Length: 396
Image (tube, rainbow, N blue to C red; front, side, top):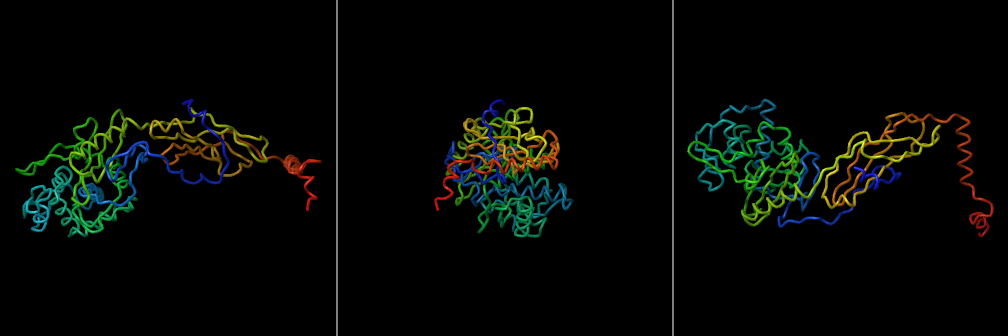
């Protein structure tokens, strides 16, 4: 990590400054919307219209399932609860609908666990509607609950009007929020996440293969496809290789084959072209910080905690690291006091930072010392005899 010692500069500033300027993208994609997220840090590594609202189609079902997970955790329902299939759920989401289905029939009584498999693996619209009606009384009421929980999680772009992802006015979410939802699912519900990698699921005599094209790629283990005529083909997918997990979201591709091809390519880029570096207190030497009115004029400093920096490998050659002081450091200073932040900026990424702390005590100067320091400051501010500043004094 000696690499970082050569790029550190000390600057004094109020706060951490404005956001970095936009940089040229190092990769591109034919998808209309695309995001790459590093799972460990949650950092967005690549975004193409990632914060814009889009139609998620069946990727909506990630939130449908997550909402059910949440309600199970809260004790409102259980995996063994049974819900009755209504005529409406069958007509709008079963075989008569001509859409993705679990194959339910009116008056069937599947359990919540079976319905979740129907949602996750089979992408069954009937399963979504049955869960919605069984939990909230109607699909619109359940969709409102989904949206409410999403907003509680910080997924501000979410506005869902149904539980299936079928056409609905104002039914939108951003690609970035779908990536965040994927991370929350993996982190918060590890007991359920493996269901996303099941190759198929059978309800009675009907079997549906998991449509996620990345499941055939080494390390891929979820999450959900989506398709509507209005939105094109989309996918939210996650994969882990050599301990590194990345998540991608793509949407707006013209065919199923194009989705499969681009998903594999973009995941390969996500895993191979980006790198995570950890900068710890023991791996970087910071310059001493000046102290005003102290018995010592400087104090040694160090990182309070490691900084995790992730970005495109090519961007690390132009990395910028700064010791940023929030304000002038004044005595007294105590060992462990936060005096600023260590800020690392990579081209194409938002800055990341960690607190910088003093490594020693610096006592405040006594009265005499402060007086001498004050006189010294005044003398430095007086122009020298014969200087240009003094000669210009009578020009008016």
